[in-house]
Amino acid sequence: MKYVGEEEQATGERSTRNRVVRSILDHGPSTAADLAERLGLTQAAVRRHLDALVAEDVVEPREKRVYGARTRGRPAKAFALTDCGRDEFDQAYDQIAADALRWIAQSAGGGEPGEAAVTAFARARVAAQAERYRAEVEKAAPQERTKALAKALSQDGYAATTRSAPSSAGEQLCQHHCPVAHIAEQFPQLCEAEAEVFSSLLGTHVQRLATIAHGDGVCTTFVPQAKQAKQVNAGRNPA
Image 1 (cartoon, rainbow, N blue to C red):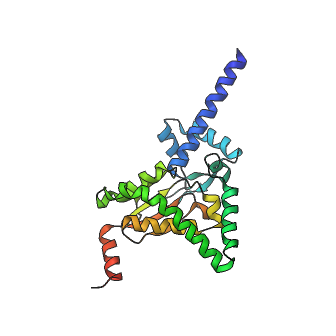
Image 2: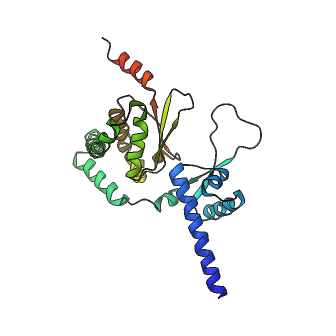
Image 3: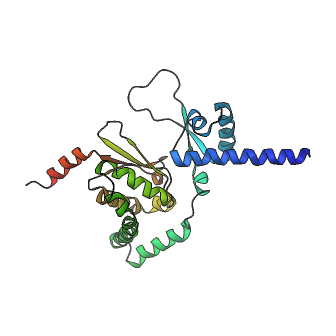
């Protein structure tokens, strides 16, 4: 009976750790306090699980980014998923996909023609995704379209959210997971094509601030406010 109790306890521990990992996936790098609040646990319990996950190379501590003036005291540590942690959720066949893109590049002759061929593939791939998102984005009110895009992306496994930009000049579209992050490390055309599609769907120029493929915790895209976007577009298309 003692063994059964220990087994049940171990199962419960693993279940809670899975909840911790999933919360970091859905919300991006998080402090112990953030996780405790979301999961209804004590910070001490969360830290115990985080220590175990760090030992397993599932998460890693990072210094939390601070926007604006720093407060006194040691900055809180935020915990982000490692590549190994992300692999638990990745369902893309990374090696096959990378081999296929290399074959496309080589078949086109390598060099600039090869890069152009990969870019064409990347644009065709995200264009097909965009058609699924377009209806959801276009039926939303202009000020809600970034949120509508985030919702559509989440349905495809990107765990996307929105938040106000630190400058209050717009929003940030945050993708806390990327199913093709390992491929995008080798072929940045995938990220570039995705940003182009976001710009097309939202009707404004967007700026990619960070990507998981480049080692950041979250893919972050800046979307300017509607008023600012109109000014940018007016500058590009003078009457």
